[in-house]
Each structure stands twice: as C-alpha cells, then as structure tokens.
Length: 250
Ligand code: 6GU
Image 1 (cartoon, rainbow, N blue to C red):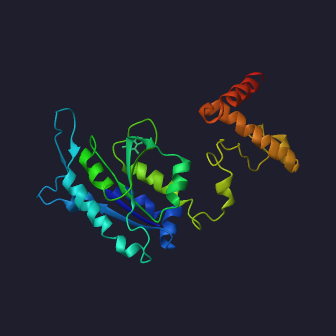
Image 2: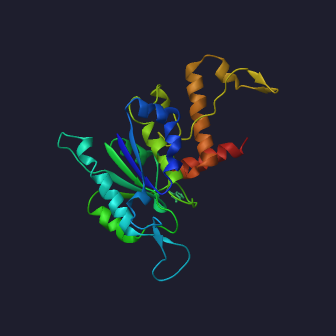
Image 3: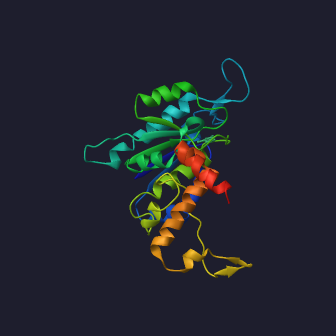
C-alpha cells in the first residue's frame, strides 16, 4: 500500500518509523511518503494561511499550496501500478467535522492500494480545495471522535496505525486481529497473566480450570457486560437493557 501525507509539520509523522508500522515499511508492505505543504508555496515566508472571508477567529489554509501539493502526489500515480488499475489515491482529510472513523472504515481503506492524507491546521482548509480534489479523486472527511485536535497529524497517526495493522503480514499473529474490540461489535474480554494471586487478587477461577467451553462462555458474558456498561450504544437496545439489568442485580 502506498501512503502520502501532506502536512506543515512533517516531523509529526516521525513515529511512523517505529514499532510494527516502521517494520512494515522496512519490509516493503507500506510505502510512506510525507510531504511538507510549505514546499508548495512561492513566497519568502512560505505562507500557507490567510484571514477568513466574512471575518471570524483564526486563519484559513490557502487553496493554492494544497492544489500544488496534491498535484505533486497525483503525479506519483504512474509509479504505483503499471497494470492499468486505478491511478489516483483516496484522499482522506482528517477533521472533527468528518464522518466517524470506525473499524469498518479502517477495513475498507485497508483494501485500497493508495491513500493520501491532507492534514489541515488552523480553522481549516479553504472549502474549494475539497471541490477541486473531489473532481480528481475520491475524498473522505473522517473524524476520530467528538473532540477537537489542533490539526490532522495525530489523527493520521491513529488512522494509519488502524489501517496498516490490517494489511497481510503486518501483525505476526493474525488471530489477534479477529478477537478484538470492534471487530465483531463487542468490546474485548478482560485478560490475566501469572501470578494467579497478585496483591491479594485472584484470577477468575474459570480461567485456571482448562474447561475451554466454560472459558468461552465466561469470556462472551464478560464482553456483553462490558459493552453494556461502557458502550451501550454498540448493543441492540434490548440487549443493552437486559445486560445492564443483570449487572445491576449483582
Ligand atoms: Cl480527524 N482532526 C482534528 N483536527 N480534530 C479531530 C479529529 C480529527 N477527530 C477528532 N478531533
């Protein structure tokens, strides 16, 4: 998979050299290119922002550096695939006003050969850039959740990690991908390791017994209860109510 990231803080993306993502890059599974938006300005101060038409607080990112940066990214398309398949990336613009980024979207994006990320800062990017880009490639505005970050860079770190770990070969133990929170709509069950007693606290008895059917039942029950307690929005309304009822009876 090829990834292009455009940002005014390319150093913010340095963590993508580390850990499993860094290894995936070294193994050739991820081809990551970070671009400095200021390289596509033409004035002495490398200006990327200006005051908003209509007034208001803060600054708005100018359209011209964005179109040049994205044209530069698009020009890389020839090199990604010589087989006549799609030669444009899906452009992802992280922002608190976007569609919620979910595990289902991470899975969709993990199937794509090429993604580009446009990291906005300040009060946002001139709206005409979205139109311009939409005429050239699919564009998705995606949000990590209902809170505000200073810019898209931290969101790109999160999204790239969520997407890249789904690529074949990135995670050694592919089974660990199946049994995790959000893969099947329930949160993960609690886990324990040795010692069996720590700080006077016992590991649940059922996990010590070796009865695999009993363990599977217990884990499923834990997942439902945990989901009802922490994320009732993930359960069908009836299931949320009855699981919470069971919790309250204890
Ligand atoms: Cl994706 N970007 C920014 N700037 N803020 C956010 C966000 C994204 N998701 C939540 N807050």
